[in-house]
Image (cartoon, rainbow, N blue to C red; front, side):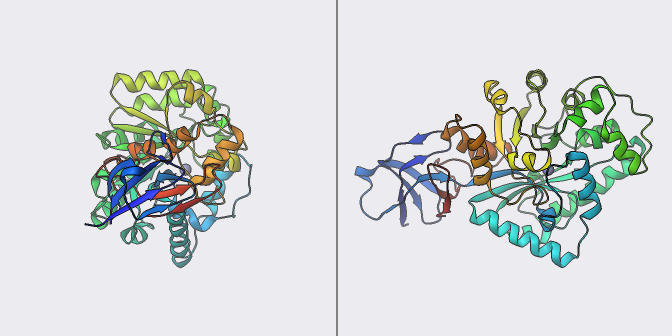
Length: 391
Ligand SMILES: [Zn+2]
């Protein structure tokens, strides 16, 4: 078996940056053998400008919305954005398929090796069947009218079965039925999803807009107008008088892990509450940041420092091309670096690699340079200006 040897300006191994005089050794398929001093590496060492880094993990994407690139205006707020997606998502199957193929190729070229992907439809199955990327498919369900819960859930389970049957490699261990968002899922629907989630990872759009917390705290919110526009009678709804997170998280007792996505309005009280609830039932929480989408939709970023100070496991997502100009983890890291220049580089890279792999339960093969893994190998510029894929 031939070995491949790589040396850069340092090696980011998934947790820390090792100094430049180390060499990463893999077999010819890119399966990690070891990291050794350059003095012991012998000949044929490839030299690269930049840090060697495991492949990126994108923990929040909607591949099926790729055809909506540039369609919806920026900074309108979430309520108008959600309305726009619902009204404008229908295109011809050809247009939808070709946009997905292009978006996936871009993700791959940009160093992404795995994706946590939200699926409202089965549109992505054909693309994923031939994809070299790893996928965790979150089959998303919504419905705020309690009476609609059984039917909505049944439809989601049908889509779930399509995915597990047609994508056997992904199978049940990388497919879950997942709630869309607290303001769009009734308690009855949360209960059905929860019953289907034992041992799974689920993903929830959490506290993406101040309107969401207002809906649960005092009931005065633009989400009420949204439901009126949709012709839905939500007069039954009594606001619980707490934040959105404090309303929904206690209801999802079964999943092994929960990805809280966006967290734009999450407070320190919410974080502590969530940690206490999760600890009480041995559940792992991941806090997924999609900074470019937050700037696109709401024009604001989450309190990243608060998450860091509370030792939250942070991961990175791109969201969809309906709310982002590109599906690039590097671009998300650049945005974080611009707004929060004090976060150490190794920490940012860990969010984009190992934490993401752990969140999607793929850390046995991805996320770090450890013997036996096949995480992909990138060269990332130290100033985060560029990324190049080696394997
Ligand atoms: Zn999303």
